[in-house]
Image 1: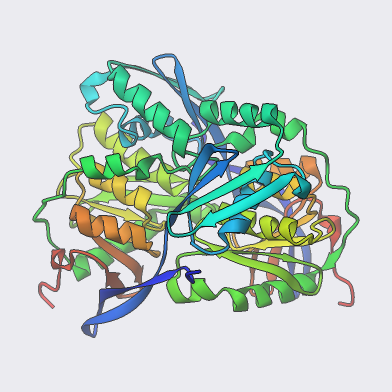
Image 2: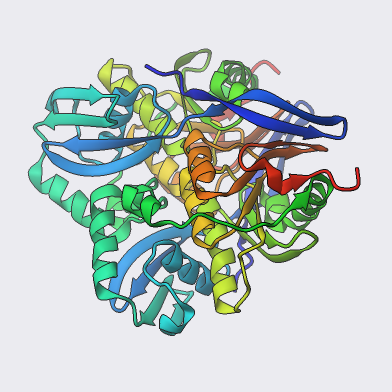
Length: 264
Length: 264
């Protein structure tokens, strides 16, 4: 499997002059997901962990609900196709497709933000707490791990963590994909997500928040900003949102009782 | 019209202590676009310039081709709906919808990246040149103008420029939307885009590159990174990509003859 980058010859211009160098650029790969012979979508993604991406996507979409529904996953990474055979609920799949047909679009769909989705979503009830210093330590480690970003400046990272360690880590040009890869890996390898923490390099928007709530994750930590809709959903669905973790500072937007100052 | 932000009470944690403050967060607004009574899509966007966003979106999608096709645009910014009545090519619209049904998905569709779209796209033939110092001056001014970003850290900016000045400027939580707002404003107000420059805060991916080539823009300048697919399209379609403009440095990835060192 490719490492997600490609080399290009470019011109570097500065006040000191012009030089022709070889630079590393993030790859952008069209991946078509086919569920039970039905073409669902083509994602633009980083070509790594395609199996996990497809799995996470199908769960995030509500098209699969349990690992035991999956009969077979065939990844063709040359043609950019993942075929999933599953005992999925046909009616569910038709509903999801119908909804997407109506509401999704062109790089910025919103099938996630239908009222039905939100109403059906149970509140995250976890009693997990994590201290400010533990959050800082996780984000430090998270930044150390972000390899493609350091090389290309062009990708997002995401991680599933407990209060002390990164358990699953992924990178992708799309912030949605990075999180779907995490959840796909968790589902494939029976890694629990409840009582855990998601760290992301990307914005916490409504779609990201719904993905996280669906996997019953009580805390999401981001180096960047949330949106108002993300925060409203977080407040309703019992998710703690920590944003702008930079240096030793952070903002806690919702359900702040989960972030403690133990031992300080 | 709202200015795209909302106030939240949050906890700010640092090594010095915890304070409860009021902070400004970027709004995320679902906007449904209806063309000739057919619901096309719901975008998640910043609730500013909705008319321009809808117009730019319809042109980027290839659903409209000329301003004179638009009969009426009704913006309902309370319910989040834009209705467009237009003499659009019914077959074209059906094709686009069919394509979207097959290929788009959930926050990350790729209707833009169908082989048909790319093959049908003419090469940008502009002889425009811009000097390194002019690029730096434009990016400086661009950063000065990015108001919502400075307040919230949560939005993208885009601008249409000539070699000396910013002509149209926009902000949106989505980098695609910010560029569609620019092009929608240009179409509405008969502002030429050929022989001009787009500056963006976001990544230059294949979808962004296609939008820019469709409006015949020869140069795109970004503060961040391109993807390999964006660069391959740029090379094929005659677009100059300048990335990582930071401090006094920049990378020129494609068609570098347009970036000069005049007067240095």
